[in-house]
Image (cartoon, rainbow, N blue to C red; front, top):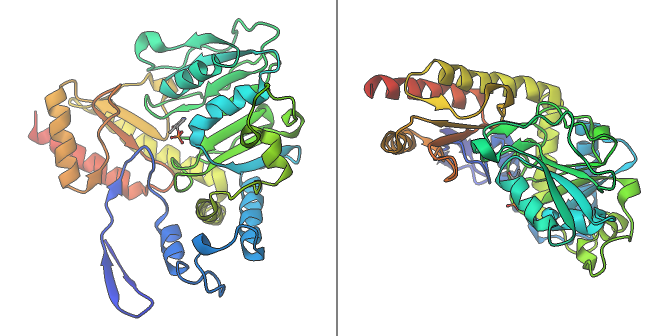
Length: 373
Ligand SMILES: *Cc1c(COP(=O)(O)O)cnc(C)c1O
């Protein structure tokens, strides 16, 4: 709960819960507050950002600054293009093969729902090969990817780096054996530093860890951008179209990009991605430690592969899980119900989840355990 003073000087009480949603998810309160303050008049323009032309000078500054700040945050080399697109991460499942499957063959590592969907989508366009999978144990681990059987002519190797639903994360990138690497980082975007040069395409929907739904960020090595797409690829689905127009081929998700830009500035102000990583490790450790010591709750993921962002856990009894989710909700901890494919609970603790949120959750879980054993 916090109190703020409105433009007309009237005090407004705002009540905020702890939101553990997997996405759309929690955003920094400071960013939301700033956006609220600029809602009616963005920096003297007399307009809201959502009302202004994407071709205007003022908007041009917003999108250019967003890109520049993202480049600084992630250390994106000059030979990579940054695109702000629409269609969700799911549209990339098709755009990637349409733009990159030049031999019509690609390798996929299937570690959950999202990589399985990407793998299935790619089969529409060519031969998609599942070279590793953790389906045998309900995706509760990351398979060994140090020596994959990769045909010489695959166009790329595809991974989902952080598995939002199952709560696993690649702690080490697969050995690509010289092939191109494409990674869906939707749910770990900007959660820790990355070495962009290890990837050829890195992309994600922003609604998990960066901004409002409606924006997808694609970072692509420039040499991969060409008009050699599969025949029939729509203009809107060619990376080249958006590279040439600097993400302004058509109307972009302009308000969403503006919020992403604010989140980039918030991250830069708070120490960038290494500071974020330290904080995320601290937050995740609090919850994992509790789960490891608890007699009621337990994590579902092999410890070595645990995500810092999405933490699934169960009690082992569907009724007890249900009771917990309801009690947690009543106590101000929202969206803890697990995904239907894992059951139980899932706490998504993205960058904007304050450490106090995790501490209070663990405290609440301890109380619940005491009262239910
Ligand atoms: C949420 C999610 C998606 C799907 O995102 P949409 O924007 O809804 O298409 C894909 N991949 C991962 C890793 C996700 O977490």
